[in-house]
Length: 426
Image: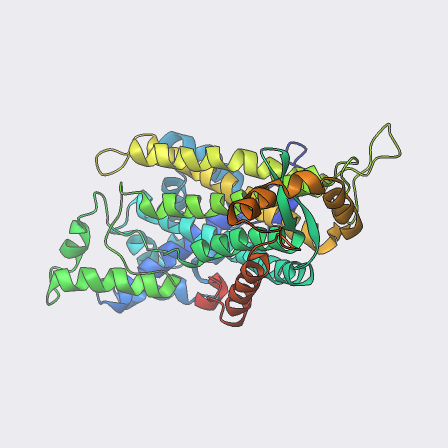
């Protein structure tokens, strides 16, 4: 369920659905609390009766729902984060039926443990959606590059004619960027954040003091929670914000790749060029002849705005202090939400853009031929240095480059890195 109203400020936002929405974050925080309580019981730290609330249908998730988002959000101001109010609400609602569940809920955790881990769970869902779109884009771009290996056009540098080029090589360049983006997402790690108040896990050791090897119990608790959530076991990372900035960088890398693609489409779809066009152009409120490249425009919008969001994550990381930052940590939450949602929306727009992209090879050839003298100027210079007549073609190793990139794409499609779906771990 999405908590986002239709967004007049960001056309297409509805494509992200409920990803990174408040209900999704609420659900993820409850999952973290439930996994922690289950681990306490399994380790023998908490009594078996503490699991009563977990054993009921839908576990702790039955105690709260989307209707609780608004009051929890309003109450979060008092403590600076939504976890404090959530824990109080869960305990209040569990108390009447499951007193031991209420008593042991959240014991040994801190707000940062719950919120950081929940944020990664939510972001991982968004990344899975983006990677699904990237897979479709890789397939389409490989098809375009292969089909147009020999489609000649004018190569342009700094807006001016340079040398002969092919649209297949241009599509291969787009493809390389998309492949790089997906590989960066696939390389992300999703470490659980569990450390207690200051990352020492001292409360856990104290809770396990009557058990053999309390420190070993503490390590086992972290590993158990990570496994229950489908995350990687990790030492506490509190104010070392690398897991957040890496995700941000990978998402920005996606919009970088799509921005390059969209800019080419916007330029080459100008009426005076007409070498490319979107499958379905957008209309104008006053000029009925227009078929605006709306998808490319919206993709470019994302590419122009996501780097600043990524920069905010880095600034927040650099400003982290002590064992929980006073403001830097708080600045990440909405920033990461906006970055992830905008990347999801741009992914969908880029997929649609490529699916309907029209290549006007005749226009490409006409422009190439009209500028042939300029496009082959370098060739004449090279041939003159070699003391011979220019060759019939001047495309260098273009076809080899296209072939290598298409082969990389096919390898990528045949042996994909598994998508990070949360449902597999519930």
